[in-house]
Amino acid sequence: MNMQMIMQQAKKMQAQLQKDQEELEKTEYEGISSLVNVKINGKYEVVEVKINLPEGESINDNDKDMFEDMIMLAMNEAVKKVNTDKEKKMGKYGQGLAGLM
Image (tube, rainbow, N blue to C red; front, side, top):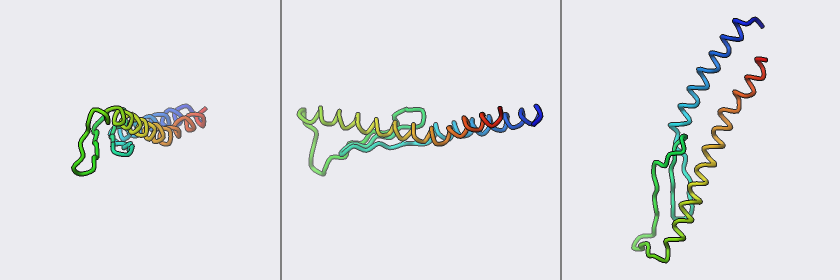
């Protein structure tokens, strides 16, 4: 393989890497924990939090700790989904770079 061909492949890989990174950042991931749904994007920014109470019920002071825990669990689930997707999509670039050397 000559140097020019390696550079072309590297540029092509870099362009695809940037495209994949932008796609990941725009993708929304949802974490669900009982009565709480949380959506975050690929930049780990929270874009939506929903509390899904049964009709006619409300949150009282006694439920505060429970809801805080549910929000934390839903957030952690959404973050895991972002990380899994990133590993799946971006891991191929680590393997591709090894092939260039």
